[in-house]
Length: 106
Image (tube, rainbow, N blue to C red; front, side, top):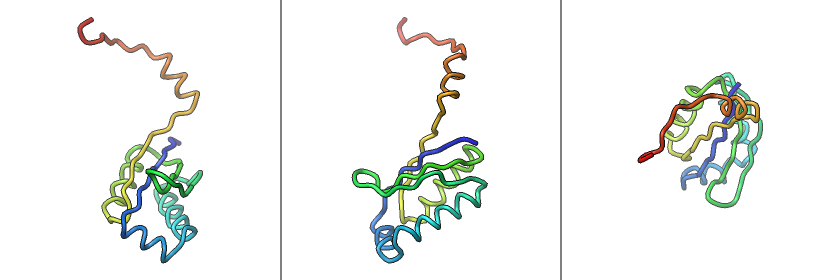
């Protein structure tokens, strides 16, 4: 199953909800949501810096990842950014593919 990294930034409303519910409750919500899409959470970490939460998850495909990002961001408590993750074997497969490309001006 494809793997994704979701980078999450809390909005002021999201932070208020976190202060009310706590991190464990939010982790449980995220787990149920991803399982409902046919996936599973690998990791979920709270962080300092530009992003507040990092979630790595397996999902059936890009449409599930896109649906998750759109719906969660639309509610307004967070903003998400999604990164598609590749295994070493997937990178090996990509390296073996022939790509016909010419650089601009070459």
